[in-house]
Amino acid sequence: MAKPKPRSSVRGFTLIELLIVTVVIAILASLVAPRLRVVREKAADAAALSSLHDLTTALELYFNERYEYPSDPALLVDYGWAPTEDVTVTTYKVETKSSPPSVHIHIEHRASTHFFHLKFPTDAQPEKRSKK
Image 1: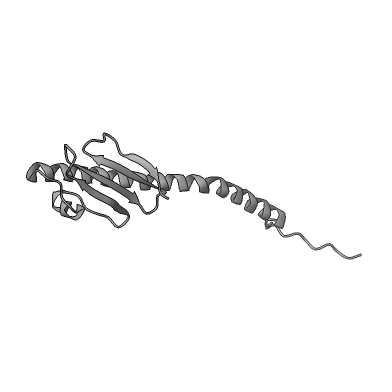
Image 2 (image 1 turned 30 degrees about the vertical axis):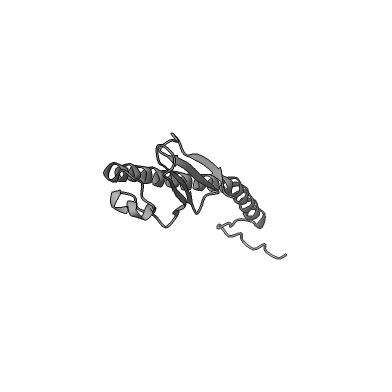
């Protein structure tokens, strides 16, 4: 009669156990991924709003010193507004015919699906709009 081989004291995982763990990890990752996209978009919107706030502050400083609004937002760098690589001013239009003079501003972040519109100084809050 043949002797049975002694079993090793070290036992590994079976293929089924490894497959189950892999499937559970994939399911958890699929639940978390959409939430990360939403969080990233909210962060991009917050960065655009922060830049818009800095821009309006610089506009106020410029207007208080010169009694007019600049024709180009690049002139506001000396007043505390710094353009960034991710946030862009897509529309900047000075209206001098209205009373008081105003500036139409559209600002967006490249990672966002929205842009913010503000008619300065008449609008109290920027309006969030979808990109087309």
